[in-house]
Length: 159
Length: 135
Image 1 (cartoon, rainbow over the protein chains, first blue to last red):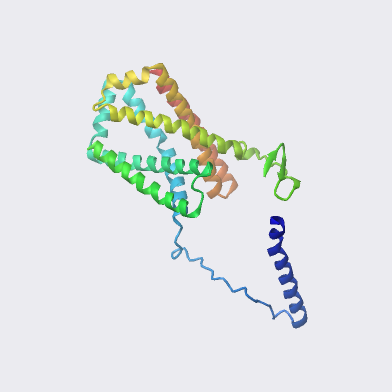
Image 2 (cartoon, chains in turn purple, yellow):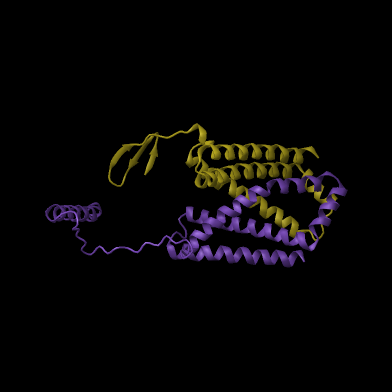
């Protein structure tokens, strides 16, 4: 039964297509039949297109990933200095505890938490949890809010 | 669709059709299926390590050099940190490869960027291992 239903739209497309072709053949190329098939509106203006929240989550996941990749040498450099000697550790701690670098650190943490949460969301979807459109939209909004909340908590902890 | 040694058998309609496996030497990666799995496994390793490290930071009110150095001199932490580093590098490679392949269309530009990225990642791996095991 299900395989029959699969062919129904294809058959109707076939019938419609041949009917259209016959009319064109009889009346000339100017005439085309369009019963029930309305012209769909086409919008390619990038300024008026609003991306769905799931698309925004996807692109932010990618952007945060690339930023984290670019930060690998910075992480390694700071890590190397902090382990090398007590003086190095002191310098790292002094630089990391000034207000400006705390803000930078929080931005990095926000990037990390967002990427992490988006990854966990991905894993849940791989397991078949939350694949529906409503749930996916909800979780896409959730990960942004939770990432900001966790970063704010880290900010409170740092200050 | 079930993948079975070069064949893709379409179980829904009962058809069996052969899809030629495309292997491109310039893609600088293996199969997409393996990339997919690698991305998940490494992400879980990193998740556990990050939770461990964050709990260390939150658990210690004031971290000094002695405490910090002692942590990373412990064999198990060195080992787990090496595993974490390895996961970061592999995860980053699969992720950056995917993004670069999606957005950079000119072939030679893409090849150059991907080569630079993979060389940089290998250097990071060796640098990180030197930091972890050298001090």
